[in-house]
Length: 346
Image (cartoon, rainbow, N blue to C red; front, top):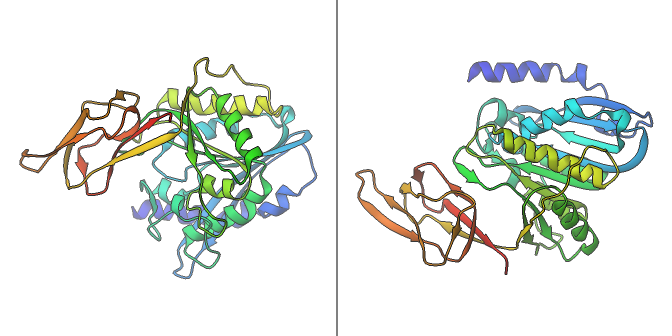
């Protein structure tokens, strides 16, 4: 662990050399085409230090600003690997518009192999928005994305996957935000041409003065065309999951006339707009023969828990009919852990 943090310190010590220009300086640079990588350093009152890598790719011609963010959770590897490949593959000479790419949003979590939170301040970046400029390092990162990255964006995509304990069905999702009907319509359109078969919409009921918590919900609240991918599972890198992510990005860029490398959308879309969550009511060991993508009917037994002696504690039944979007797939569970999310169309 000490070695990992020493490595992180070395990264930070290089920040001043690599990031001679701030994000705003590079983004406002009129030179085209352009590709520049910068690191934005953050330090809080407790002397915690971290950095945010940002790549800015400007095509020959003007066009939309498309922002891609991965690695909000450090153990969700397919999004990070997919974005790494995109960074190597995209040719700025063939690009129209601008890409802002944050390849690993939570570098401290990633390099320390910490699943959800930043180990420096124990804050989950995907619950920290809109952030706080005077807060902890994670809150500072959220504030920077909210005040600098999102306002510069026309389209904003946040890419996630299943963590170390999650089995997950790949899907594209957006918020059905009634405050911005045109942006919502565009977000739906982009998810539908992404190549993902499963398209999930979430309701949006936040007031403007309520914290969004989640990064692409913040973008939606701020009136951007905002969407997300979920692809990958169980803390591993699956080639198919990486392929889904890259194909989805290329399809959207092609649809926006930004980059010509797309394929056809899925021939059969499954639209889902109602999610039900089944949570554990006790600490125990969870057993289930089901997997993400399985269809269940209301009342079906979907699993059970035992204590440490193998004695059955409780059987769990499906509270509704639908498709399992994701489920816990490692044995230990605690009270209020989400055992599975079941989704269906109303």
